[in-house]
Length: 88
Length: 467
Ligand code: HEM
Ligand code: HEM
Image 1 (tube, helix red, strand yellow):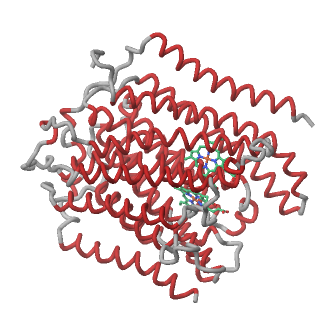
Image 2: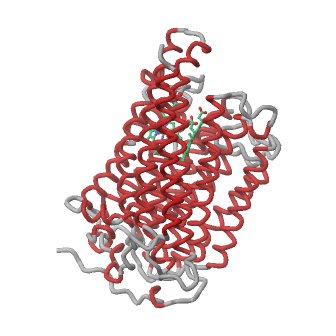
Image 3: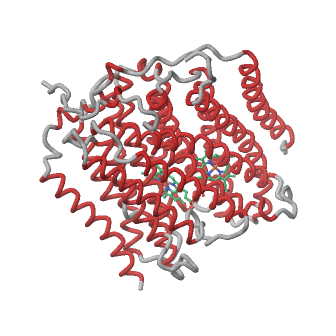
């Protein structure tokens, strides 16, 4: 019982891939590889606006800093606690 | 001498179309990812706390470790990482093809169905409805919903490809299409969808089938989606062409051939047929080919341009993810060797590997992809670079710390197992590592909150506020 399932399973992936590969070859997807390298750069010139560093309201900054400090503090406390509690 | 970029007809140069529904699908998946990262991390944190204090949930069965663990895992995979990577893909696929997404309306419907499936996963698993197979716990109706959602995504993207103005398919397109269709197929097969009651075969064949699927979640879903994002984000951030597109295609095709059948490396200590183990171990080592083809390509593209990467928060996350990919893959190839696995199997070592892979590699790249596309899909700068940097460091410290403590705990457990020590003695020895792990988990949880806030403020600015 084991073989039919797994051989089908593995074969399905390979056959699917083989078919698509044949299409790609016929469609010229492996030609013009030099141009393909530039495709993601297409509209870089019009790159989005630079990210903003400031403009966080004071209270928001306070709350978020508090959150971060709480996270870091809890982690630190947990480490110190575990080191102290687990001394042999 | 490289040819200049294609001056396509670009039937609708996307920058010039201001209609409100644009990028709705990408936005939807971005928000999905940021939101579910919070829920997923809190489930992880709860699970970690229960490993320290097993009595914590008391008689609340729906909060017990056995239910919270699968909630955590399903949510990190299908709630946080996959939607994050898809959010970026729904932006870059139309851009790279110089066309519009086939249907934003269909995309919105997919986002809805996807979130419906996630809610159903949480509710059903907490209520104790499970098929009890790792990574395939959800019950049949949810399986159908998930396969349907992947089918819709494939349909939408495939028709976008069909309508393209750019004849050449950039490597990212190959990766995302393969990931989506292969996952639709392997999810259905691995969840034995034709047996709604059990969702399983019986005996050892079921374990083999499950792990073919299980490993494909990392290898044929998260890895190709992450590679697709990295291949898009890094050249753009560096303002340099990809080092080699041919090499990237070599990596893609070799990944397809090698990764599809290495799942049995999860079952090396199980009586499965030896030929399957041999294939799994050999190909796990051969994974070095697609891994290095990808990494060499990305790192050579970025060579001498680390300043640009540092300056771009999206690329910073993505690049860090590629470094993690190096570590997780080398570690994975080693863990596939039976001699190594004698020590590392069945303990926290593997959980460490899992977090470097899913959080350090795929999760980092997902967040990087979100930050890379957010300014584009919102038409506004990121709300706060400072918060994004803070999130970066919290996650980086969190995941590195996870790796260290879980690896140490795993080695203690592995050696104890080999020495025949009793389990209750070992539990005491690793208790301290569990505490440190929970502390580190709090950092990752905080990072998830910060990420959500930053994204929400970018996408939904206050009326009358600064742009
Ligand atoms: C060359 C690449 C890789 C190889 C050869 C590899 C190998 C392995 C092996 C042998 C195991 C089983 C360990 C055991 O049970 O003893 C494993 C587990 C795992 N791997 Fe990888 N790995 C690789 C990359 C990755 C990546 C990139 C990810 C994430 C995207 C990942 C995620 C996981 C997870 C989550 C598990 C835990 C599965 C469980 O629940 O038992 N791996 N890997
Ligand atoms: C949000 C990003 C995260 C991702 C992508 C992630 C991923 C994973 C994965 C793939 C597993 C399965 C491991 C295996 O079966 O080998 C896992 C298990 C687990 N994770 Fe996470 N995780 C994340 C965050 C967290 C956080 C913040 C915590 C809190 C400490 C945490 C605690 C746990 C625990 C306790 C387990 C179960 C381990 C066991 O069964 O012993 N995770 N996680």
